[in-house]
Length: 173
Ligand code: S3P
Image (tube, rainbow, N blue to C red; front, side):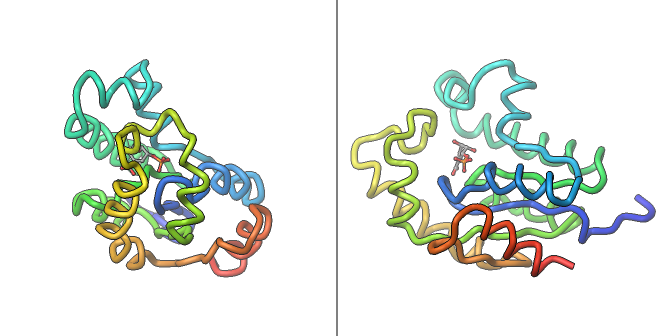
């Protein structure tokens, strides 16, 4: 672990619909560093969609995969952007991994903005319930203080994706 420069490893965190994957790709191109999407890496390793993992093995099993994949990606790469799933900050172990290997950046948006972006999504098992908006608000309220503890916070409500990337490039060293 010599020469680890934590400023060069960025974890994008935030609620479902925050734009973590979209912004992650833009940033990795602009900074010319590697990009990983944590959910996609889990899907590749399992050879099935997140939705199927939830259906067939349950959320707890998914959370175990999420932590081991986060740990593996973080320890076997250098200079990266990783977009995480919205629930990653809930586990203390995940927060420990992210602070050990890099900096967290919260893509902050209002729950109403987020809801508009995810309400028609079919691949988010946690919102595939009756009263999904109530569920989304509950989850958001449970998590928001943890998101706020990130190393950087960028308010995205009134920005387009390129402007969000511009903002991020200004605040990271
Ligand atoms: C989850 C968010 C999803 C995915 C899984 C659980 C969550 O990722 O990891 O469905 O707990 O909020 P996105 O935030 O990319 O939708």
